[in-house]
Image 1 (spheres, rainbow, N blue to C red):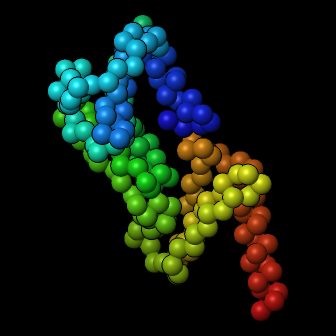
Image 2: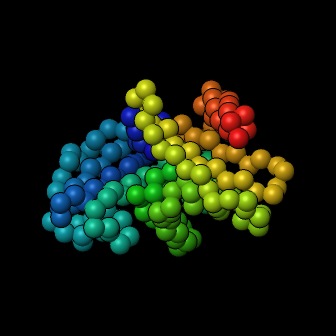
Length: 199
């Protein structure tokens, strides 16, 4: 999910013919079933993993975490077939942005499964984006709260003259940039100028 307050998951639920949410916490497994956005089961505690498997969830359950299985509503969508590669790219971005998460993406139709975990976060992402290029330094990284907003960035200079830039706000990609990107460029430019003047 992305955006403020996990609104993405609410939208998925509203647009799904059926959605099953399973959470494992403190050794207990809880689940809820929704149909067209409406709860139909109420929050239940599963006696064991076999009860979850009966719901059609055939994935090795983590020690703790959540599993969401949804069926897009064919009355809402023209097609209910999705591009595996498009979803994988989005989940890969999320795995870099949330290095504490391990994301398991399973396509039950094809049997394809990808496990995504990037403990290095943004530093690992900039290294990945610069593969095949000659790095001029180690990646710079900063994570800091400014005016009650968490700001995190990483950058790496290479011999390539073309800039590669990815930006996100609340886990949502902002390919057109925005004030956060303009402010970053302005601040970086000012810092380099100040350093050049004093040295």
